[in-house]
Amino acid sequence: MQIIIGVSEIIKARKSIKQNLKIGFVPTMGALHQGHIALVNRSVKENDITIVSIFVNPKQFNDKADLINYPRNIENDLDLLEKAKCNIVFMPDNEDIYNNYQGYQTDLKGIDKIYEGEFRPGHFQGVVDVVYRLFDLVKPHKAYFGEKDFQQLAIIKLMTKNANLPIEVIACEIVREKSGLAMSSRNERLSDEQKTVSAKIYKTMLKHTKNLKPNQKTQEIIQKIKEEIDNTAFLKTEYIVFCEQESLKPVYTLAKNTDVKLCLAVWCEKIRLIDNISLHI
Ligand code: PAF
Image 1 (cartoon, helix red, strand yellow):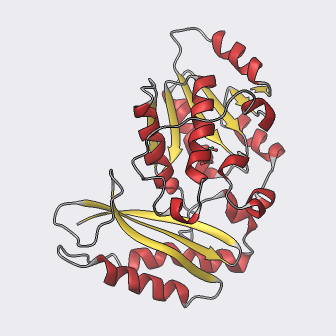
Image 2: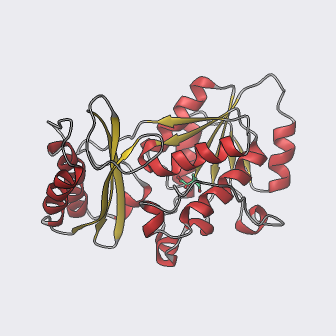
């Protein structure tokens, strides 16, 4: 496994890859877990070369404390990537990535301003800035993203389409702990007790969406989920929304034969967790 730090080195390495080889790319911010490794495994399976980036992108942190406290564990990351048969790890530094690059502006049709975007102003612009830059450097054929960051995935798909990039953006299922808690680098910051209560988030979403019926008002379901989560020690919901899978438009009344997403953000004390499930009505 080759480790590349510099932007000029990744450009050189990319140019030296034979044209007929397929390149899979997994952008990460490190603190890797089995959710990331599932993306790497899929890329290794579907491509000739897998490139993983590790870069904690300051531009996407609206909360400076979150940036400072974001878990970092490079040795373990490299060990996991080596075992997963990753070919190249790109670990740039901030100055190099943003040298002579201001970011990428594109019309995100407002989907960067709702839900996560409302509570994390500037977050998605930061994600677009770095992913566009990384796509430009790595020039992958396929790029892999986890569905836990469902809104991020929709935004990256839109950015890729707007920019006409010849990259297939691939959504990969959420990987969960045995308890049901969605895997996330931020889980490293949870105590054992907090991990146990946080598992209630997924369970509560499932419990209140078991018997959904057409014409049901989503606000009633949201209210039940919110009450149950907010009545659990440590947990406080930030938002809960039902939305359309593609457009992300909010869904107020469930319609027969439609697919919807139930998305939420919950604070477990100082740690913000997000999750979502897909539902067919
Ligand atoms: O999902 C993440 O880890 C980050 O948002 C990403 C896509 C690597 C961009 O920094």
